[in-house]
Image (cartoon, rainbow, N blue to C red):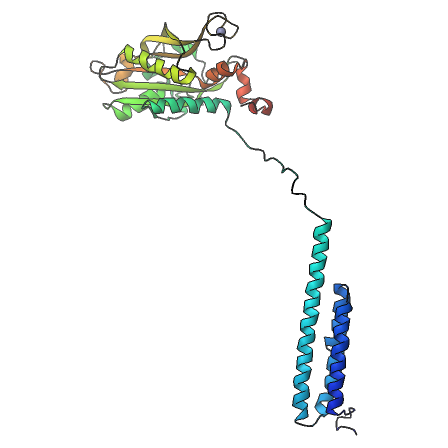
Length: 355
Ligand SMILES: [Zn+2]
């Protein structure tokens, strides 16, 4: 019997038999596939556009109703089951591949990790922070001011007029404008803070970078940190200066440290004194660090000069104050027995990594 379309006509039972047979053979092929490529090729043979299933279904059109519906439903079931079987087998093959890969490229979790390179605080800044912390605990605020200053603020208002011999002590970086320079000390900040706050009392420290046009040697650099302090108010005396600076030295160098004050001269303070602490290397016996004296100079200080007070807006008849200044690099050198100040800005990691 031939259909109108010229295709060989099958009985419904034959077609169902053919579908079942196809399903059995395809399932077996799925089971037997051992890699993903082989499986994909078999899937195309069975489920592809010109595959075995579609070929079988060409006969569907030749079937009489209602068998056509029943066989069609069965054909869809077979197709859907086979698609699931192929997908499951593909997943299983891929999982197996992953497992093999994991076994072959096993991670050794006992291997120590690579250490991360971490930065650290520069030794001069470590000391600076320590100094700032101590003064902050004693009620001193941090006051920062500019590094480019006018000649007047850096010298003139600090009791160093143009003819003053003290101006020879500082060789200065001037800009193309002769009235503008890189500050040689943090002291111009004293004028700034006084003019800002007069007639209120002041307790501040003024940390920051200073610049001097000097020959760079083991003892001197063209840039360095300074921490200056200033207290202004009524009835502030030299006893306050000594007591406060001694308290500071005890916090920085230890409660047992001995201190002494030596008369000194600075243009912006009167009277002036330098403070020494007992050499912490030799305990005051005398060594190379203290050059045999048993003492180390740590800061300069004095009562604020009346001219500086009035330049800052305070009446020297009613107000008094004290000021002091120290160098964090110098203190760091003493503390760690560093013999060359050039290490601080040399960017040599062999030096910096020791702190
Ligand atoms: Zn010593």
